[in-house]
Image (cartoon, rainbow, N blue to C red):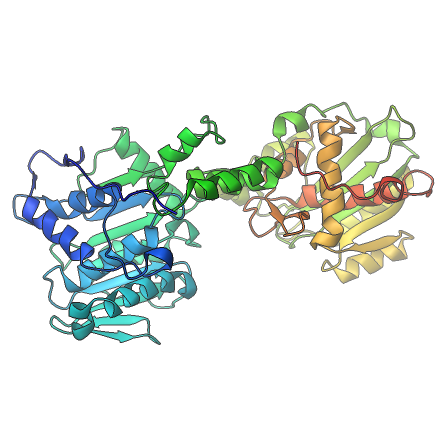
Length: 540
């Protein structure tokens, strides 16, 4: 499975070492030797000594060997960003044990933090297994599995798992924190509590942050990532902050093995190149996977779904749409109510009447009037500009006023021949009843793979063929650019509302309306699905 272990041939202290600090080889050797007395715990490596790979040893020597004039460590924070399967959990567990058992700190408090208890347990379980496999530690460390706690009895030091879903996290006297997968933190609360002031009583606390890249550019992890980049590129100076980022830039060719090697320092050791090759081939075949390949294998911060809908192709479909020209024509609606405080989208799609025509998209959006300005500031999205331009409407109050939207749809029904309105079956029951009372045919539309996959694939196909016209509507464009796609084992796809941190309501409404327009067409004859089956292409 693996090449021969790569060892650190020669060591040069980090460029982040301040002028007043020095490299203490014996302190670094101690940390390296402690870790190399531990064993690997998983797979083909299980029970074998934890020999540090060159890049791992460099990090350990930098963190534990660079000391201030007073003999304490220069770096209090270490931020390591690295793709998956590089030996991240093992290194984090080893650092946690070193801080708990080997750092000479009486009653040290070391915490393992992650987004949830399950994630936080990953590093803990590796650490506990390392203790069990090491005779010297197993005699001295008590493992309390149910509490996810280790106690190093000679000094009364503890290693304890915490997660973002734990309630009260104040009152810590922290010596060390190991944050695993910082990018999954739902907010910054846990990070702030654990790093701001909790280690003040300690002489050399260490906050060890190790993560793969994420996709939420508003997260605490992205904030730290930006700080790390600023320090690497010399825009900021913080002598307490140590950082290593293994990754590639967006411009790099993601299919090139040389690029993989740049991002994966353990390639050929902890992860076989064949595994990366297979993942790359799969991503080439299925654009929906490209994003996760870039994020997990190349450590790129990628905007969620920019890879699913190629926006340059979408923009080519900005053919003019004149509402008045569509009067009396057959069309199908898609209604995504989302929550009352959110954007509500209603999209009409007009099927082509002959070979030369396109599917025409006519979207409408509403947002509560009272919190418009707040949302502009919070979301950094120009809702106010779109409103002034007429691309977005507001309804009175601080929630979307459904009655207003019903009346609006009723007026649209007088103008156009709206055959059906598809809606998310979990949507507002009352509104559906009211629309039915107005004479509309309202059809529930499931949000699972079965219902969403065919029209989602069809939308991509029509976009690539330039067979849709959307007039360049900016709110809809923003929604399309936000889509994150989930894929099931059978290759079915659907927009993922949970993963798409930005709004996708208009895109979902478009997909639902498109499904009805394709199935029913202009004269309720057979659907295109009947004549040629459902599409299974995943490439573009």
